[in-house]
Image (cartoon, rainbow, N blue to C red):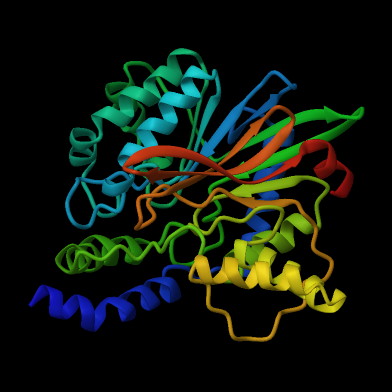
Length: 362
């Protein structure tokens, strides 16, 4: 019966999850981002840290692990080995770890269940904390860390020492004697489905989670799919385009690099090849789309005035076991993926750009 329902309802469940999981309101989104941005600049340490960094500092940004109770509603189960391998790698390389929200799935699970089934990941995160290289930001699914009076006690019981929780983070550096600001937050602010909405939390925990567990369906499609930017990511980009800074969020589970999704980047290249009559490049791009199972039949959209200052880390709970994140190191920013190759977690660089080039364009 389960397999029959999976086949019958699988596509519907994924479409509905994508359609109703987010209801961003542009005015609220932009207002919330502006208020948090100003708060960190004017009163650093209250809602978010302000960190000056240089060429020797390295950061890895992961979001949306959604660590659960290792049941069929736990989207992190198949990704855990990649995440553990990634943390081991970055700790050895002396990176600072930024967990950009929704690290723990506290809408679907009790905190005790999450603590019990994620000891290995907490132990590795603890290594960053011991080096004072761990920054934890709350999202909507782990909002508990930011608003419950017992959160501090619970975090200390997990990590063995006190952990300060923030809503955002500002990284600043000088590039060619000019400042570059990189503003990070989870990105749920202004989303009517998740920004403190008690009904959404009740629905996820009491209806969606049991339904998902029974059908054994993970709605988080692989990192590279045939989608343009989601409505929420578009609103984030519009806000970032009006700033002289870079914005990094999570929340939508959709990787964005230099303001473009993977599909958008391919379509732009294909448009250029078509206009120049480069048949070799056209075929190369079509072969790439075929290999990655990208099917796109609509007209190529107009990508006008694209400012490369919005990034999204994607998530650590894709259904194929991959995780994506953003590295800032060697004066570059990279979109990376950790995937299983012959069942071995492997780091792959998907996109990268120099901070110098980024600063010139923003």
